[in-house]
Amino acid sequence: MRVLIVSGDRTLQTTLKRLLRRHGDVVGQAPSWREAPPLFQARAPALVILDTRSGAAGMSACRQFRSVPGHGRFLLLAVTAPRPARSHLKVLAAGADDVLPWPAPAAMVEARLGIA
Image (cartoon, rainbow, N blue to C red):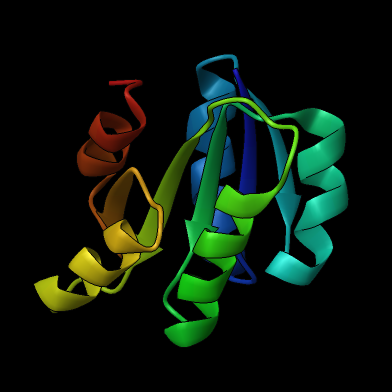
């Protein structure tokens, strides 16, 4: 599966990339939403993992991913702060398919990514 990770957090990028590649996924990465559109358009990922912990900017990026014309259905997994649940609801309302509270145990990450 083609995956795009959008995050400036090196630990998050490295951890997710390692898990995904171990399961045969092709992983691209962008440090922020501003750098993501060319990769998103060129790769047409089946899964976008978007770090939304920056608050309003993360919510805006969620909506922007969903508004890119000409792309079929893709899953959008939003990385969020562990709490509060209210922020999880906001990111889901902004277009995410699921949330991954971070940091998270490896088993939780694998379960969320469907690669356990």
